[in-house]
Image (cartoon, rainbow, N blue to C red; front, side, top):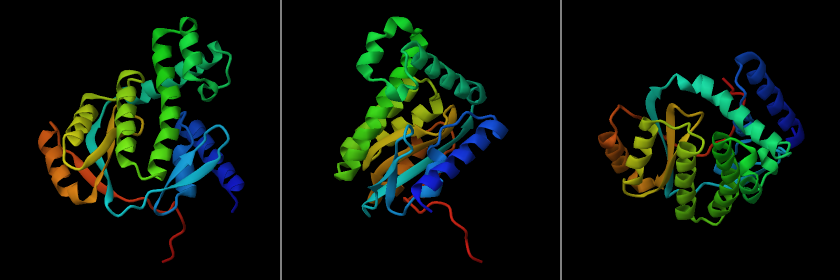
Length: 235
C-alpha cells in the first residue's frame, strides 16, 4: 500500500479512538504501527501526515522502557483538557493549530491567552522544534545531543504541560544519574505509565539496577529495539 492509503487508514483508527474510546488522541501511535520499519525511528509531520525514516540501528545503543507501575486518576480528565487549552490558544492567535505558530509569535501574543494556556502552548511549540532537532541529531549519530533534547522535553512536559508526576520525575532523575545514559523522558499520556531512556547497550544491567535502587516504587523494565510495524502473523 502507498503511504497515502496508509495515512488514510491511520486517520480511520484515530477517529475510532475519538468516537468510541472517547480519547482525543493524536495520530502518532497509529502511524508508527502502520509504517514502522526495523532499525528506524519515524519522523511524523502531523499537519501533512508526511513521514520519514530516521536510522536507529546502532548496535551499541539500547532503548530502555521503564514502567512506573502507577497510574494517577487525573490522566483521564487532564488529557482532553490539555488539548482544549491548546486549541484555545491557537484560536486566540488566529491559527488553525499550534503547528502554525512560531515561538516568537507565541511570546508576542502572550497577553491574548491565559497563563496556563501560554505554558501549554509553549510546550507544544517547543516540542515541535525539539522533534526536528532530535531527528537531525539521530541522523548524524549525535546521541548526546539527542539525549539532551529528551531531557529538555521531559522538563517541558513536567513544568509547562504539567502531565508528569513524582514517580516519572524520580525515574528520569534516576536514569540520568546512571552510567552510560544519554537521555530520558516520560512517554505516553502522563500521570503515570512509562519513561523511555536512551543509553549504551553495555550499561543496561547496571542502569536498571541503579534505577530500581533509586526509585521509591517497584519498576518494570523492557529493553526495546526499533522494529517493524504491525503485520499479519502466519501460523
